[in-house]
Length: 308
Ligand code: FPP
Image (cartoon, rainbow, N blue to C red; front, side, top):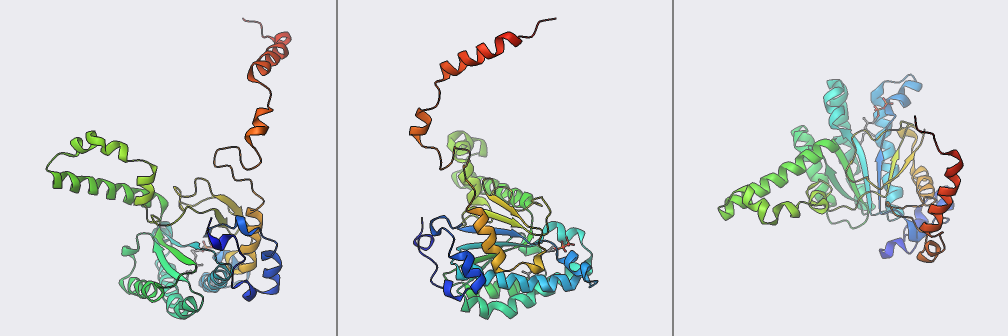
């Protein structure tokens, strides 16, 4: 557990009064370290106001900055936002994709100063090399301009798809293996036989993903009420808690992030085990298996099925 998770965040006084009311009730020992958000509902937000979709995206970009700044005020170490999926890139009209690219660029240019004021470091995941060159240049500039910040790491998932991330990870692993075989003057089969296969474990795959240096998300939030993961961080969210809100992304603010964290703190995270409410002593008081078996046998006997 990090120090920041034991003490209230040093910038908590910068939260609004409503945010502080929720924040002060949170258990500092159980703050998530990584929150990932599927930002959805920009189009519907615009549609409900008879506005063009692009205005929903524009409002969505405003919401991004509100949430980032609340995250930084509570010292959330990692915030990852699903800003543009591979599927968005392939399946949305070119005009909408073009608008999203322009919006991303102007968001970065317009907010780097605020990122620095809030000690936020910017990073990206996804097949970002396929984005337009001028967008990539702005992304690199923003990452470099915020690289020394030590507060929240804001990771934007851009041209991101979880399945393609896994494909890229496996391609990298195979390329490394081929390079190693070449270096040693042996075959890939020889390397696999000499322990290479055992070395390919879950950690090795995690280390090869775009998120290699990040902890897995503790909490994943999806806005606009859809109950799906949409190809986001499939490997990393194996044990994440999921919070779905009907609120559309452009209406999402820092206070809603805090509400999601409060809900997260009510969860009993078990990671496949029995969770925090079970101790060995409690397990010792459970009924012995032999007793249980004979009880089941007695219970079943009168109802035994006749064979046909
Ligand atoms: C979903 O809305 C949202 C996206 C396409 C991605 C999120 C994009 C933003 C929040 C705007 C820009 C972001 C940054 C970082 C500048 P949708 O169009 O799928 O909504 P709908 O399902 O209601 O149509």
